[in-house]
Image 1 (tube, one colour):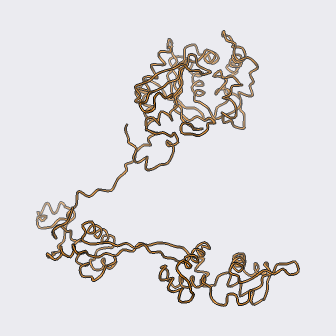
Image 2 (image 1 turned 90 degrees about the vertical axis):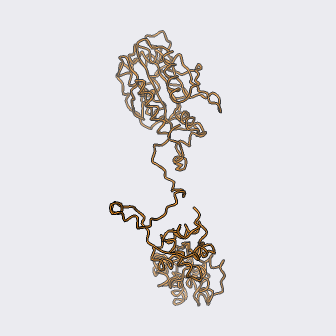
Image 3 (image 1 turned 30 degrees about the vertical axis):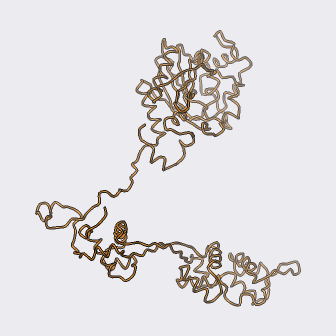
Length: 515
């Protein structure tokens, strides 16, 4: 809103303009505050509003100031350590380092260092011992460090004024003074701070507006029930508000985008009749590999792929189940299977590790719930020794699902997965054959994106009998494990999986709640 008439000004704006018009030069906020009886913050707010209308101008100057620290104040009063050490040396003509440490305690090393840097003393070797000897005529006059401390102790802290005071005693320019101040700041004797100083002056447009005559009257900022009841509001002037001025941007609290996706996945599966289960992050190699018919010499079990703990623990399974898994690994047990051959070693199954998939949790759940129907899922953290890049992390979330029931088929598995991905917003889905040690048949799930083409997002299959038989399961088990990170990347339009975990407050504020 451009103000063209005096009547459009608020009472505070009129007062500030009138006060500025009475001054021959620019005013500082404190002077204006005294003249208008308005506090400084409100004066500046009013001045900025007037400046937007070109009725006044606000000039800002950033000035640098310095002040002494607690240690700096002590040295200003007592003298710098090197000054007191020099006086000590002059009185004794020479002294050992131990002599100085005895005399000055903790500040002895500081004193010695600066004595040598300022060339106030030199080291002389005498009878196998280092002696400090004062340099002739050293430190007879106060040096610039002492002069700066003295002036700052008197309160002369602004850079230009400080330079003027110091230059009266020693020939020094601004660049040199800055160097000495930096040295004192490195010694923690002086601290620097900046202050913005403002000057406010009326413009010709402001003077022209006031020339039309000004009437200052009180304004009401809020309509009260009393004013309405008595009708006295008709006799008052109300403060004008510019409804076109942009309001302050407000960022409402909201759930993290990645957490919203996790919650959305949970809702989809619970709506489909699934129950969520949880399990321990640390699992035995038995449940993580052996019970899933992964051979003990499989590459995925090597140290370069799996995070192992340094301890072992007895396998948390009945002896009969352990025996069944052992026989299945070695020769296929009672099935028409050859197993993996060789000798299954129990001590390898006792090794503890950070689970590489949540299938260890779901299989353990099935072993304790062998009767159908079972429909469970888990969304949880898994760990693998992955090289960090835009699509891989060593720690990530996995969505695991299990269906066990009489008569379920491979087609039911594909239907569950297709339903889930369509509900997640990916209508174009395809399946291609895949291989996993513990499922047969197996598929990999891919979704189509216009800008990226087909992208693989997880694996699925029907548990092999080598997995279900040892734990006592008699019916087919449909299983899938989906990489949530990549799915979240696609849903949020990200190109780097690491962005899901960065604390980028700007992205979090601007990310849409719904997509």
